[in-house]
Length: 533
Image (cartoon, rainbow, N blue to C red; front, side, top):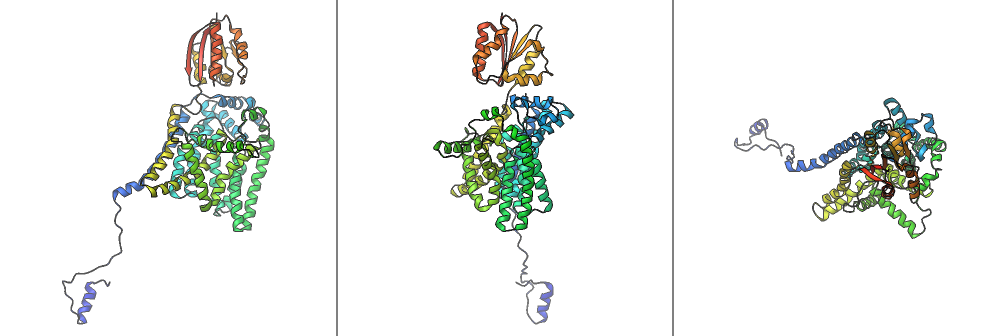
């Protein structure tokens, strides 16, 4: 429609046309969208608020877990004795007390403790920093790799993953494993999507070559990233890109082979560790029904620990497992490269377990949690969208049910960490109440913590008897160690990392020798004082 103005109205009169001055003037203007109702804008902001709140909560929980500064538990204490009392060159040799960790991680921790001291906080500082970096890196990874809704779900799950939070405050390498996995996937994403320039390729080559010195399972992650990148170039028949990516993988291979034959291979020959992890190696080949059940059981066990979906909360581990499987099927059609990068590391770890080179269990699988949560988030949103088409709000209820399990685990972790073992409190109590002439018996599982805390809580060496390792729970051996205390007025018994059968056996034998004057129980630890006259 023509716009009527005073100028063209005047032209119309001159041409002899009659135009009424009362005729309404019609003016067309560009369509302006109506403002969205306030309720709609608030609803649209809810997902963003939830994501931001989960990131802040995840950061706060990691800071809280670290600042709580709980006592070292047995594995931390044994590793601490190696790092604190060995020189840097000595850390390149097989560790004492059947401990194992990547040489890069050991040297990094040694550098920190040399500069700032060997306190619990300083020993755990690298893991804590790695936990915060991992959270910061996972956000861009999720948003670049996944559709918006799935990215939000994955970020919420990662932020509140209880084992990622717990291991960010422990003096063990597993939290760093997860962060390195996130970093490698973030570096690899533009490569397998053919969006990477020369410098990104160089960064991926250097990052992967360095990663295997700081994380044993980084090799599995590199297997997934490398396979996705090579397959992408091969499918597109981009031979120059394939050659460049082969060079990157070759750099990883040289670095891994060097690290493996110099250091990691020795760890894989430790018979004690092989016996300790017995039952956590996949039957190979899996031909019998029991072998298939082993895989089935360990698949869902992964979503309990370390993925953190508490089984007692609406069978959340099974729910997460189903989301993972649905996510894999959908991702195979929508983004097969991402599927290869995220699932291959778990498959490689499973095969390595079949060769008795890497146990498929618990904390050793922390590295696979970030990739698994990417797939779980993707599958969960797809299921929620289908449910929403069946009944209103059902999709939201499904997502809340999935999120509530790790959130509940985080809440429980505030009250009791993953490894709550108050060896320090037991040792401190005995030290504060020590009198001249007292003697002490240290349970074998508390010996590493006792040795670590000895400078802080000194005891006269001649008055302390440390038990010998007795994982077979041979009662007669405990009795042999306790018999020399007969006739003593004040005998302290320090137990940490306790097993109830061992504690009761020790207490029953001592009750037959004398009288328990004092007994104080802490988390997974107990201190007793006996009069054995």
